[in-house]
Length: 135
Image 1 (cartoon, rainbow, N blue to C red):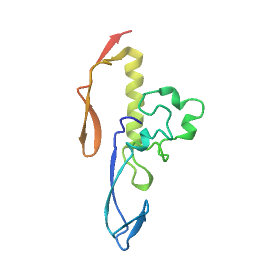
Image 2: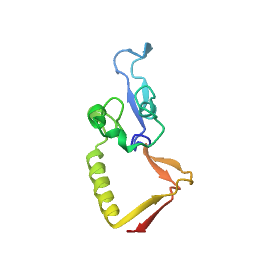
Image 3: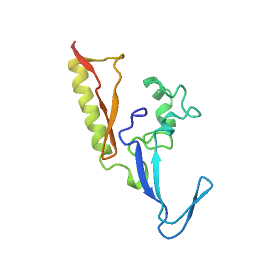
Image 4: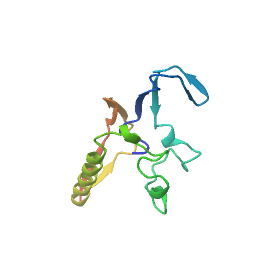
């Protein structure tokens, strides 16, 4: 979810009634702002080897340092407008993985490139190849 966040792009509006300063730049009132977590999820100043999938990064204090919804890890957005389906998605993902991994071994084709598609700003893989092996 860090490298392929389900919601990698957010839209917000600056204050409707007055200009605001963001990153040292003055924005007119009611300016639409595009926010992406893609860059923060890959920031080498924060993440060691940011382009690699390393599940062990969450061990030994990693979850405490970068909890879901923190400043450097927010795959479902942040604050009062975070994705309303976040809790359901997390529950369903854990349940689906538990069922799949207790019955089969999942093997991803490491040589197969895949792209991502967006549906209402939610990202999902396209052409991802995988096999389930009998345990």
